[in-house]
Image 1 (cartoon, rainbow, N blue to C red):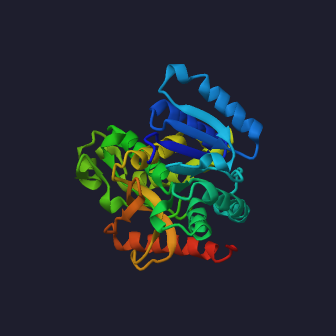
Image 2 (cartoon, rainbow, N blue to C red; image 1 turned 90 degrees about the vertical axis):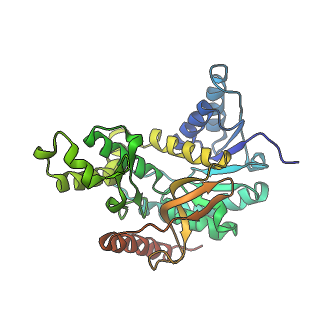
Image 3 (tube, rainbow, N blue to C red; image 1 turned 135 degrees about the horizontal axis):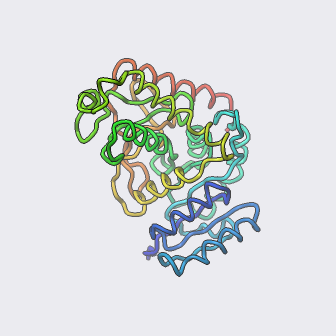
Length: 318
């Protein structure tokens, strides 16, 4: 009989993995959390620290272990890999992290072959594709964090400019989680009103160069990770919250629409690449993706983003 206790296994006890475990614990989503890391001492310390706060939050069993402890997981979240350094692009990490994944994925498959796999390590789109190929799993059960974080940054910056609650902003960043990502301005709205129609209602409208400001918002989104890494060495708070949101969609079978990285076919002429697009996420992983109506310029930018990823994939050995 299938257990009723939601179980999440986290591969990687670095900044992202440990912060995600903390955020997961405080939201009370998983009743069992396993942390696996080649540095067992680090994983042990993270679990001790987390467990010392359990009397102040929701019930959970949190422990460290090896891959066999991933057995019976509902969700395996992979955050392990080389860190992005200042001045380094996500794509620069590709070969090193692909080799790491060649070691991780077979071990996960030995013990957690029925789990949904969520890839977080960068470059996330390429490593999601690699995970699909290495694991041999159906495409719905392997997906990446995609542009969920980028979209959250985007909505926050729009909300800040327009002085509204970010939860009332509906807009997506799609494409690569990286330098070729793109904003879907043609579908962006605030409270159901297209953004170009909302802007004239703003008290600052007469003193605002709208197009320049919107372009600046996107540039800030695209460069946010570089600025944070330069300032503090790594990004982990916001991505941890993005992962918790994705985890909720899976463990609670929510059928939520999130811009995760999934394998696409016949998407504005693009095939056979994992890339961030709005998709329906539930307990099976990605049930299906949504084909957004894009402007001509957006279609061109999306194809460019996909082709950039495919050119990198062609250079790695899987």
